[in-house]
Image 1 (tube, rainbow, N blue to C red):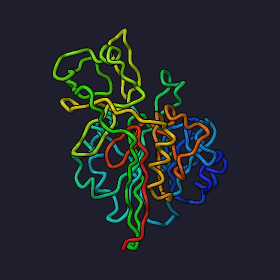
Image 2: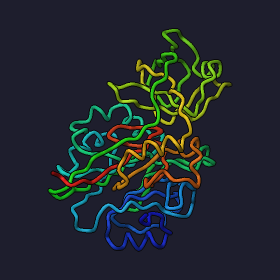
Image 3: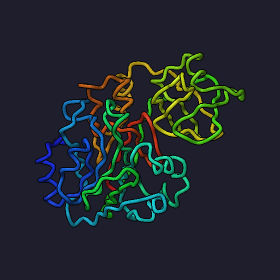
Image 4: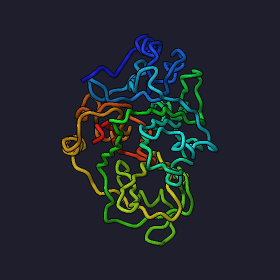
Length: 329
């Protein structure tokens, strides 16, 4: 397995070489890196050479290409993000990082499918997060290496062109499917909800979660024309009657609680065995790390940041997303 976890000094040397890099690390580390051809997002959880682990000192490095390859780094706000596919190369791919729980995160989650030509240009990436001990005190940030500045509200993307003989393909590994339980709908979009409808009947969602005995390690799942899209639980506050999610739910979309999954690691192993081992980019979800007890364990040859959300064209949760670069024809 190639080296992917680097010290601050090693990462700085890579940046000075001019290579285009996607970096994940604690905010304090990212702030110390030199200006260069990199994008970054705050994440202290990783699937590295030694398996799953947390670190506030090391940097996960996805090396995307050498200087002079034609790659571009672009910063996005709410007005410009819908044009991300237009900015992407005709043949290549884009890596996008957004800060968790930001208005841009919500906008992308709700409207990415409306972006012109989105599904014609391979798009992967992740949602920046923080150490789980710091949720109440620290906000996720993304970093534009061209300026070295971190942002709470902007997104940053690296557009990587490929030569004519290669093509990028986005792939998604999701352990979850809709179960056979109640149909759940919500009156409005958002990362947090109080009210819901259970099979059409009004209810408080936090109370429903308790009374129905829902296992919050399993997400809600919506079926979008056969695509199973997860919305993962962050917290259930019974006193306030409020449930917080890692991705937003959307008004009037029908959700069901996910069907049970057996042993996480065994299920990952079974699915990974059917997927190619080589990936130019991959990321996995912090909840798979926690609930799958992946600390010290491997998910095949797939490495990467363990994130607060995954991007595989649209926003995803509790999935493994990866991108292959294949010979064209």
